[in-house]
Length: 516
Image 1 (tube, rainbow, N blue to C red):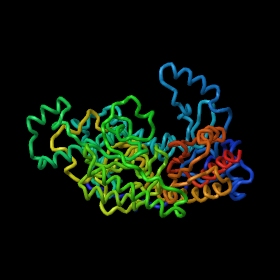
Image 2 (tube, rainbow, N blue to C red; image 1 turned 90 degrees about the vertical axis):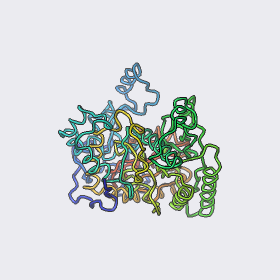
Image 3 (cartoon, helix red, strand yellow; image 1 turned 120 degrees about the horizontal axis):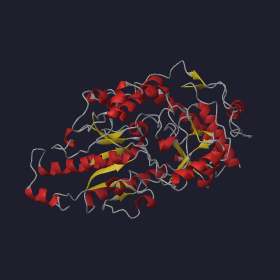
């Protein structure tokens, strides 16, 4: 199945964008005096941006706050939910029947601008009309009520669904896919593919049969059947919470406590200093040191790595970046030493960085061996190109569902809207605008917006706050839902339909939070 590109061939922004409904009430909490925004922009933010264009009709003019968050109805529903479901990680009870576009509504009628988007997972807005049509289609109805065990009983049109959807946006050089259920599952199955690839290579090829000793020892979790191999990851990385993926996750102890883990290596991810142009020499050394550590671990770690996994931006670990040169160096090392490179695009993929896949920013000489995806794709899996990454026998990479055709159809609908509206290029433009305005705020309020990062990376922007948790709590009362990452980072994860007038509302809210 040939891979078709979207990145460079997306259509330009639609000329006839819709008008926001003019009947929605104006927000009361985004206005701010002494703003770094222009007077016109500030008035627009304060008034709910009347007559601002939107990709879809029906989106509110702006956020509105009617009660404290959580309000009385939300508190009552939380008590009810807690009797049957653990609510200790609850952020905000939501009414999805009333949420629209970039705006999330709670049971008390509070409407907030959502720049967290279900932990970076909503691509084109709540209750998107195009996706509603997909959901109501005969194909979707059949996929939902006749969910197949894909490895045994795929639908007659499964190849067409893949070629017109998931594989239509395959990264360059990768033309096959293994579909999965979630980001953790995508990484876990990619690891399995790496282990089987390595051992097959060591045996002498796909036609070499397993020995009797290998077969019997595998049932006792012993070598040689259970291979003595590892996956190399980076400190402060996050790759999921299943057993294998959790062993490569290094972001927070609470993720890992009490869970048995594999003895797998970790290298230091470069800790860049900002502004980048003022610390070029230090940052180059940090990246060189990291690459040297990676090479040493590949050559000498007592459980040999067969693959290196890396995020283009360490999203859960604090929004940590590295330069394209670092990632090109990493690719050169993996090729030099015969180990695979897995790029975890679960959070960075599907347009948020101003490229469909974040690793496209790197200009790699050769593609990664596998690219994992989920979140904004609404489905999951890993792309690959080398046919030897298919196991040599059936049932080695297998489970009942092996993905979900309903979610694959949804992703196809998402891709269609991204193409129609030019949302990747749009996100790059809006991200540049937002970053420039945040730079101005950082200059105006020294110490409040530190280590601003994500320039040229679309809306995938973050900064450090001296009181991060307090900042996030205040954000709700100022009509914005924002997330954090790492110990100090405020991360922005708006949807692909986030526009300049949404950015102005966000900027006005941020200024009000930090000036208070």
